[in-house]
Length: 261
Image 1 (tube, helix red, strand yellow):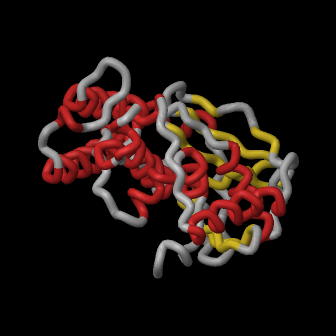
Image 2 (image 1 turned 45 degrees about the horizontal axis):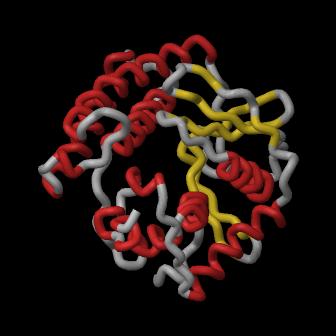
């Protein structure tokens, strides 16, 4: 399926709105992205947290940590095979690419242990998906918004007194209310659930965010953003937005506009 006709997602819309040229380089030109340890940190943490929850919280904490270690190491090694020069890896702050790989390995272990402890102490009630009877973890959805097919995965759906609450697990600092709003609409439309708010689990702090109210935007309003992005792609409209964020862009090495900033 061509990129013009693919279903859209939260990440596609937000990437396109931030810099449509990056969207083009990644999704049309298929440029190989510069690796970043923060990405592997997030993926490995999600894998470990999901395994812990699917075990009904019966795994030993060190077993969960081992899942993080194995996943992170495998992802880093695969990326090193493609780009062995860690000086060319993306890294935040004062760290080099090589330093960030080691730092995030240790940080991810801390985050994983802290999540297991937090989950044991707070015992969030994972909603049961009625179709397969399994826990709503990494719950796939496909809905139509603004006439556009939208798909994604919800990290966790939590049972609360007045319905359910979508929860996103965050290892970084960037949070998307648009993402949570999309999740809320998806759960309402697909399952007829009462969804009044959502939240983030903040791995850096070992706690939940404050609940985010989801009654301030309608499905039509969300749909307008998806439709606008989809229309831009179909027009072949990919304006660049060079600036400060180029230093964190995994497409910058292949971007003419970034080189001029």
